[in-house]
Each structure stands twice: as C-alpha cells, then as structure tokens.
Amino acid sequence: MKINRKNIGQSFSGGLPLWKALALFLAFTIAGCAGVKDMQGKRDPKELYDKAMTHYLGQMYNEAESGFKTLMEEHPLSPYSVEAQLMLGDVCYASEKYEDASSYYTNFVALHPTHQKAPYALFQKGMSHFRDVLTIDRDQTSTRKALFAFEDLAAAYPGSAYHSKAKELIGFLKKRLAEREFYVARFYFKDKNYKGALARFRDILKNYPEAGFNDSALYYIGESYERLGEKNLANDAFSTLISNFPDSPYVKEVRTKLKES
Image (cartoon, rainbow, N blue to C red; front, side, top):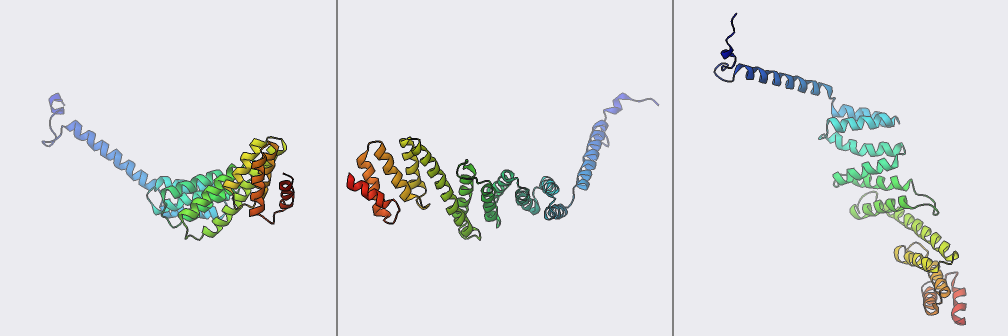
C-alpha cells in the first residue's frame, strides 16, 4: 500500500490533523487512567480516621501517627483531616514526644482559633511544656513556655472549661520562676556580686509580686544596698518591708538595723 505523506498532515473529519487527534486521545486516556488509579488508591477518610483512632486507643502510637498523617495527605479538605491535626498532638503527647506535640497543638490553634477544641489544644500545648519543667537549679525555658501558653488560654478563652485549671497552673509556674530568680539572686549575694543580686531581687518584685517572695526580696535589697555603702537606699527598703509586711520574720532584724542607723 502506498502511503501519501501529504495525507498525514490532512484534517481528521474536517477538524484536527490526524496526528494531533491521536496525541490528544492518548493524553486523555493516560490522564483518565491515572485519575482512576489515584481514586482507587485512596481510602475513605472516615475509614482512615477510625483505623488511626483504633491504633491510638490501643497505644500503637507509631501506627496511629502514620494513619493520621496519611489522612491529612490524601484528604486535606475533609473534616476528618481537621480532627487528625489535633489527634497528632495527642499521639505525640501520649508517646512523650512533647516538643512535637506542642508544635501540632500550636498549628491547630493557629489554623482553627474558633474551633470548639481550640481551648483544649492550647491547654495541651501548655501541658506539653509543663511536663519538661525542671527543678529551680536548672534551665527554666520550658517553664516560661508553659506559662505563656496558659496565659494565652486564660486571655483568649476565658469561658472555657480549662480556664480555672490554667489560672491555677499560671500561679504555680510564676512561683517556680520566682523561686528560680531568688535562687540565682541569693547566689550572687553570697558571691558578693551585690549589683547583680539587686537586679534579680528587683525583678522578683516587678514580675512576680504574688509569688510570696516580696518580703525576702526587700530584705536582700536592703542588705545589698548596705554592703554597697548606700545606707539611705538600704533604709528605704527596710522601712518598706516593715510597712508592707509587719508579720515577716525579717522585721525584728531590720527594726534593729534602722535603730542603729
């Protein structure tokens, strides 16, 4: 059979050239097959969520984390995907990966601030850092992060079920930070770094007035000034201590100091 080369470029059924029509047909066919394959490879979002939850409740945390991530990847617009974001925080929290848990909770609140579970996520963010709170002689970065999270919760969601507990933990964390400041200030004082001690004791009065260290801070402020030769400033601190905290165990000593001066 003799092929006429001119016919190859002629229109097919009066429209596209034959070679273009074939190319388009193949492209649509391949795209269609790929789409069907993708749809077949994806499972129902509820199925994925339920399976991941089963793993979570069974303490199979690696499998649960993988399942929730798969759900978010395959069905990012599904309501189950929103729940999966929060559950990833819970999975990491349960498996003691507190830094990762905090990140998931942070993202959830940032993306869904009006969600009914946003207060819970913010509370859990605070608890993720609270789990890493150390003794007063150690770094208090986690203490501060936990405090900020609970303060954000108390301010943003005052009517939530977590508000009361958040306020309680705020008080505890502020006291812990005040204890840390007092620990460092006393170290400076004993090391005769009185200027450094003064700065720390003043910070206690300014930042943690409800932590229960005000009379002690005033006493050491007076003592520091006295050692720096600032007698008038020392007496001012001692007088304030007597006026504001008449029942303080330091009062008897500072009264004697004031009489002698």
